[in-house]
Length: 423
Image (tube, rainbow, N blue to C red; front, top):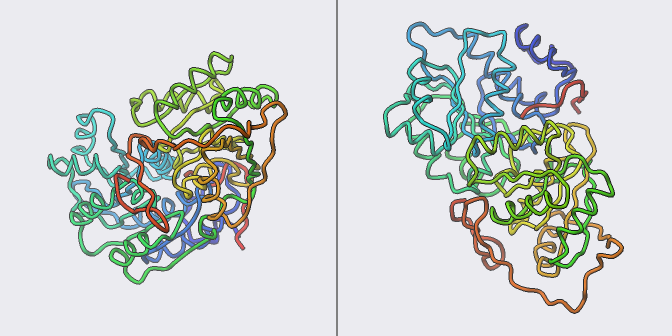
C-alpha cells in the first residue's frame, strides 16, 4: 500500500515524499482513512510506529478542506505529556504542513517564558500543541480561546495519566465545544485509559497495532548481574570495549543522573544529563548534542522515557530498573524503532531482583542473564531497600497489594527511506 491510496491530498503527499517515506506504517494505514472520515479513534501503538503522522496528516487535510473566514482561531488541540514530545509533534506538523501555508501551528509548554507564547496566541493559530499544565496557565490568564476547537488529540494518553494529569485533562475538556472529533493515542490500553475513552469518545474506531505492553520485536534484551557499587565501572567498560557511540542511559533519580554523567565524563566518555530540573534550554541542547554525536551518553530520568525522537538509537541501558514495570517497556522502546535493530541492557544488582521479576511477569518471559567477566556479583552482598525518591521530579508511587496504586503526580513516523508495508 502507498500513501496515495489513503486519500491524502497532493500537498501532503509531496511533503511525505520529500521526507523519504515510501509506504505507510500499519497504524497509518488504519488510522488515516478513519480520521479523514471524521470518526473518533482509540488507537494503541508503541512509540516508533509512526503514530504522529497517523493523526497529523489527516488532521491537516481536514483543516485545509474547511476554510474558516475571519480571525484565525484554534481548531485543533493536541495534548501531550512532556515538553520534548510537544516540540517534536509541533515539528512534525510543520514538516508535513509545509505546503499548506494557510495553516498556522504553535506549541506551548512550561519551563520557558509565557510572554512569547501569549504574543503568538494573540496573532492567531489553527493548531495548538500543548502540555496540560501550561495550557491551563493560559486559560486562567484568558490568553487562550478553545471555544472553536474541532479536533482534540490526546497523544500518549497513558503517559499523561501516569504523570497525574487526569484532572488537568478534564479541566481542558470542559473548555472545549461538546461537538468535536476526538483522537486518543496510547501505548497501552489500561483500565484507566478505557475509562477515559468511555467518557470522551463517541462510537470510536478502535485500532491496535501492537500487543499490550509488548517491547519492540527488534530489541535484543539482556541483563548483566553486577554489584550496585560497580555499575558505573561496568557501564564504562561496555561502552569503551564495545565502542558504543550513542547510548541512552536511564536512572531513577535526577541526582543519580547528574552524578553518573559526571562520572562518565571522568572516565573519558562524553555525557550529559536530562531530567525535570534542567531548564528547557539545557534539555534541548543536551538532546541536540546527543543526536549530533557530540555526546556519547545521554543520562535520563523517566521524563525521557517517552517522546524522545532519536533515529536508529542502537543502545539503551537501564542503569537502574524502574519501579513500575511498564516504564521498562517505554524505556527500551527508544531503540529498535522503524525497522532498526537495537539492544537494551539492564545492569541489575541484588536490590533489584524483585523489580526484575515484576518486569519479566509483565513481559511474560525471562530476560537472558549474562555475567561479564570480572564483574560477577558478590553473593555475600545482601539486598538493601531501594529508596523510591522522585521520578523525574514526580514522587514515585508506593506499591499496593496485588499491584501498583494509580495515584500521585503521575513522532515522528518511520524514518527517511524506511519501508513499512501494512499487513
